[in-house]
Length: 515
Image (tube, rainbow, N blue to C red):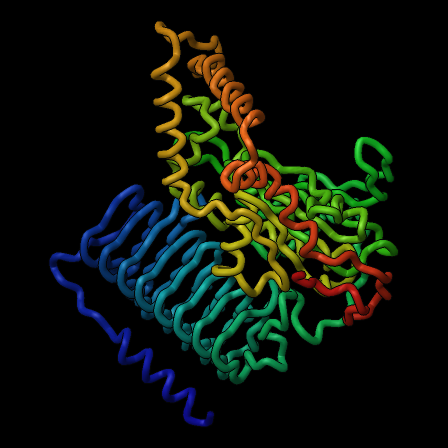
C-alpha cells in the first residue's frame, strides 16, 4: 500500500503525458456549438473556450491561463481522447460529457473537474498541484482518481461518483469533502479520502457512514432546501396531505413535487426530469423506500402512492414512494411544432433521460428528501416496475446497482426498436383493410381513423377464442394479459412489525424476499 501513490502517479504520467500543438489542430478561443471536431482541439494561452453539443474525435489541450468549459446540461458532448489542462485558469465539465481517455488537470488556478449527472470518464482522473479546488461530483470514472497537493481557500469535493479503480487523496489543503454524499469505489480508498472518513458508501445509502442523525425538516420547509445531490434541482411544491378514504385509502403524508434540469431543448420544446415523492408521517414510516417504475413512453408523473401488487398502495404500508416522468411531459410536447408525444425521440439528451438519467437523478433526490424529512436515510430501498418500469428495473440492476437493495423487474421492455417496427407493421395491415379514402380526425396533428375495422378484427378474434377449446397457446395468451398485474404481488413480503425510530436494523419479516 505504501508504494500505491507513486505507482498511480506514474500511471497518469505515462498514459496522459504532455502533447504538442500541431498545425492541423483546431483552435478554440470562443464558443463552438453543434459541431464535430475531427482530430485534436487546443485552447491557446489566455483564451476562453466553451463547448456545447460538440464531439471532438481526438484530444483536448488547455494551455497556460486558458479556460475550458464543456456545457452539456442541454445536449450531450463527447471527447474521444484525453483532456490535458496544464497551468490553466480552469477546466470544468458539466452535464452529459463522455471522455474516451483520461482527464488530467494540474497547476491550474480556478475550480476544475466535473459535475454531472452524465459524466463518463473511461480512463483516469488526475487533479493535482492546483491553486483552485478540484470537483468530482456525480460522475463515473472507469479507472482511478488521484486528488493531490491542491491548495485553495475552498476544499476539493468528491461526491456521489462511481470509481472503477482506486480513490487516492493526498496533501490537499484543506482536506477534501463529500458534501453531496459518499462515493462507490471498486478499489481502495486511500489518504484523505479513506473509508473511515466517510468517502466510501455503505450499502445503498447516500448518507455518508458515520453521519449522526440529523434534525428532521418540516414538510413545508422541504421547499426551501438547498445543496441537493443533483445540480439544477427545484422543488415546486411541498405540502401535507390529510388522510383520504376515497378513491384510494391513503394515510396523511408529505407530498413533494419538483423538477431537475429544466431546460429548452434544441428542438425548442420544454423538458426536465419531473418527480414526485410521498412520505408517510414519521411515526408511520417503516424505514423503507420504494421507487414506482413508469409505463409506456411516460410523459407524466404518476401519483407516487406505490403500485406493488397486493401491497398497493405501498404508501399506506409505511413506504416512502417516488415516481418520475421520463424527462418529458406530454402536455409540453403538445405545444411543440409536431404536437407529438414522441417528439422527445428526436433529441439526444431527452433519449438519455428516458433511457436512464431521469430515474437516476430522481432516485438520488428522493433519498435526499427522505433523509431531510426523517433525519436519516432509508434502511432498505426497492425498485418495483413493469413493462417500461421493468426495463428501468433492469437499467438499475445493470447501470446503478448501488442504488437499490431489491429490484422487481416485471415484463421488462428491452428492444424498443423491434417493438416500434412491429407496431408499424401492424398499423400497415390495419391501413390495408380500412375503407378508402381513409378519414382523419380534426386534431393537430390529424390522426387516421383506423379504429372501426380494427375493433371489428379484435371482436371477431375474441368471439373465435371464446368458442375455441382452451389449448396451450390460448391459455398463454389469456395469461399474458394479467402478467403485469401479478408481477409484484408475491415478491415483496409485507412488513409485520413497526419500525423503531433511530434503529438501523430490520425486524423479522421486513426484508425483501423472493418466493
